[in-house]
Amino acid sequence: MRHLTVARALTGALVLQIALGAFLVLGDLTSSDFTLPRFGPSAPRLTQPVQPGDQRRTFAPGRDLPPRSPLRDPGKLPERLALTRSEGSAWRLEGGISEGDAERIISALDDAQAGSNPIETLVLQSPGGSVPDALAIGRHVRQMGLGTRMLEGEFCYSACPYLLASGTTREIPEGASVGVHQHYFGESTILPAFVAVEQIQRGQGEVMEYLEEMGIDPMVLRPALATPADQIYILLPEELARYNFVTEES
Image (cartoon, rainbow, N blue to C red; front, side):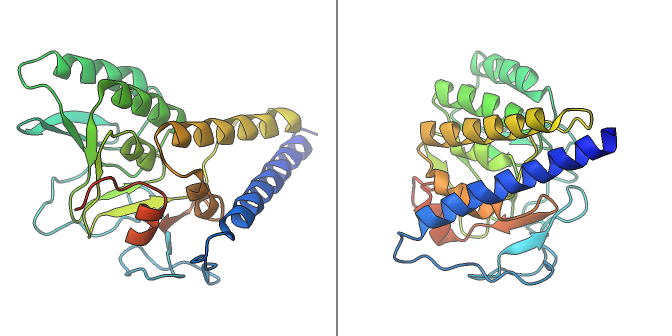
């Protein structure tokens, strides 16, 4: 009986994501430059270049990641978010976004801001992770009035773009990789179907509200909802501009 409940919950969650994705697609059809992505039966590896209509790549943190820049390789990323000083007023925030990271990183940000080298800009690199923690950190970053940026040859995937969105200014140079996909909101296998669906609805609503707060077009959820969690959709420079991720020339 429990297995049947789980199956129904997963089916309901899938139907909900498909319905929300269809709604966003219909909204995006009003754009004159809209084109449907041409997804094949399977996605190539992240090491393969992307082009319009061919932007989904396999994704598993720690395994499927793009090649590092030969000019900038900080070594293996930490499993949990780490805040370290880079140079001047720029600090690096990098690593996986684990459950519970928000409280720890918010405290670290406040401590750094109170020190002798306060933060003006956060340099981001992360394969993503916990969405609620990313949203909480992002709201705090916006309250602090910090900018965010990426470096050429580095990446920001899954929940990381929500951190990127939090900057009062956002710099994404050509050669940096930003990717989105579906998220999970509550993965308990013992929840009844109506609770599982309610969690997904609430989670998607919170993400849309957050994006609006940060000045990002919520239509970025269209390709995100169309991309399964074991793949990543790489946003092209024109999409980063269309969805308002870029605030400065880079």
